[in-house]
Image (cartoon, rainbow over all chains, first blue to last red; front, side):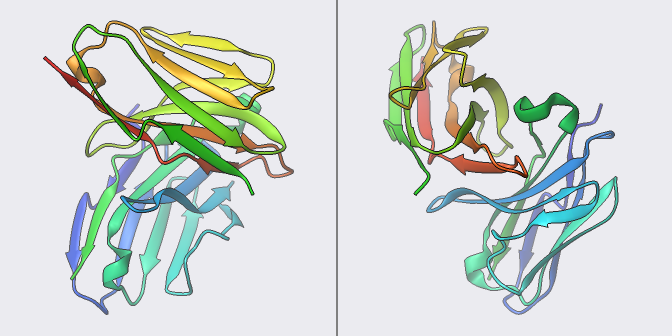
Length: 116
Length: 114
C-alpha cells in the first residue's frame, strides 16, 4: 500500500495566486481529512469528508478556502486568492469507519506552502 | 472549552535514557485519546489509541497510560534511541454524532542526543 499521497510536496507562490493541493487517500478508506499545521497554531482540522461528502467544514478559515472530493480516490484543497498568512504545511489524512471510534488516521507527507 | 495541554514543551535527553511526556485534557464527552509521533518534515504517525476503559497500552518501547478520572495521560519512552527525536502530539477525540471531532495538543518536541 502506497499510503496517502499528496502533491505537490512543496509549493511557492506569490500573494494573490490560486493554489491547488491534491490528495489521494488509501484505497478503501471512507474518511478523508485536510489539516493545516503551523508553529503558532499546531495542527488544525480544516474539513473532512465521508464517502466523498463534506461533513464538517467549520475549520476552513474563510471563503478563500475550498475543498472538493469528486471521487473516492481524489481530493483537492484550493486557496484563491492566496495570502502570506496561508503559509503552512497542509496534511491530508484518511481513515476507515470499519474500525469504529478507534479508527487510525493515516497522514500523508504534507505539502509545504509558502506564499510570498 | 475543550482543550489539550502537553508538557514539557521540549525535552532533551541522552540516548538510552527513559523519559515521560504528559498530556492533560478537558474534553467532554470523551471518546478516546491518541498519541502521534511526528518526525521533522513528515506527517504524524499513530502510536497508541486508548478508550475510556483502557489505562495502559504499549507499542514497542512506547507505553501510554490514561487516567480518565484525572483526565491525564502520559507517554513513556524506554531506552530512547536517536530515532525517537520527534514531536509527540496528544489528541483527544470528542464523542459526538459524527464521531470525527478531535482536539489536538501543541506537542512536545523530544531531542535524543548521542
